[in-house]
Image 1: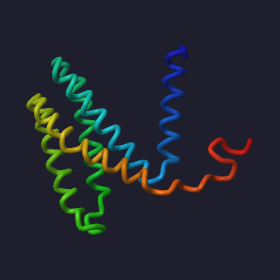
Image 2 (image 1 turned 45 degrees about the vertical axis):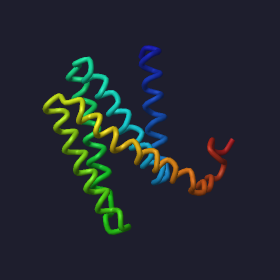
Image 3 (image 1 turned 60 degrees about the vertical axis):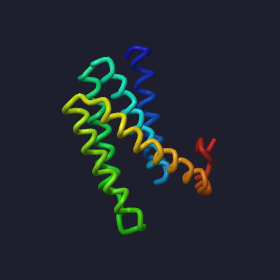
Image 4 (image 1 turned 120 degrees about the horizontal axis):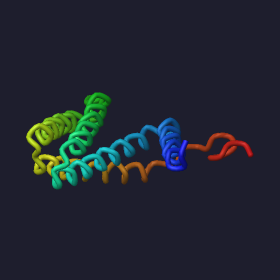
Length: 141
């Protein structure tokens, strides 16, 4: 394995470990971070007419929105139905952005989701830190 391949494999392993050990609120912020990263990449690719890259990123963003939508308990709080409607709208906008190669629809998705990403991060920062496992972050030394 090349040095570059080894570094990529290590990064992928660290990402898997971060996801597996994350709290639910941290998973949510990670999803939003990746969602906005995908949309930013899609926007750049659309602007330079790199349609395969744009499509790949839009499809991944759609998958994240679908995950957020299906995992949302609309009855848990009074804003649940509104958030579900927003996810449905954004999902349709991203499909349209991909099918019609419409960067304006991608930008619309970014404009709608970025404030939510920021809000979830702010909410996560207000929560107390979860207790450390025995041995701390690095396990038993």
